[in-house]
Image (cartoon, rainbow, N blue to C red; front, side, top):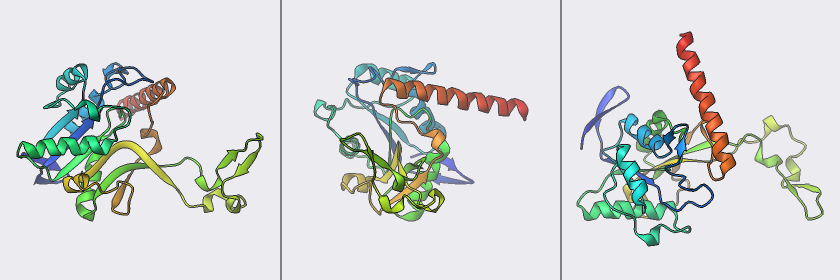
Length: 250
């Protein structure tokens, strides 16, 4: 283990970052290593994990030699190739994390904490990784993961009927002012901290044993379709330009 700095105190940790990044993406070919604003997409979560100073190891789980090469160039480990039965369209993220933890156990290394980080997370910020780790340790919960708020109250959601007309999902809340309705959150699709024991025990992520790490909505964008990719690039460039302007104006 290595000594790292988190906040104002030196701490020793036994932590691993696990980044699932299989090949064969269909809607956006080579999505995990496609160039995003001039850099391989995979480089963003690897850099955020490194900058956070939290991890003893950063492991990319992949079945692709091309992704493996890029991952190593970006500073991550690829100590094994993911089995093909865990690289299809139906395998869940938790199964990939468990496989990595089981592999580490077989090597005689069992981390206390693990963080699954998605490969397509250009907006991932080291400070939110640090916050999630702190909340997990302080709460003694099983998991801590990133969420963000819905832009509109879900209790005033509507659906389109078969005849093309509208119906409210929750008619009883339609007369209420939006500011009086309970705020709702959704999974931000960035990272999932947990104890290694919790991942291996198959405890559900979406349960009362999980702690939310609330992110601003401008740091959250799913990237599943080409339109999502373009939107994310525009958001990222706007954010980078704003940071540059703030530095100039300081």
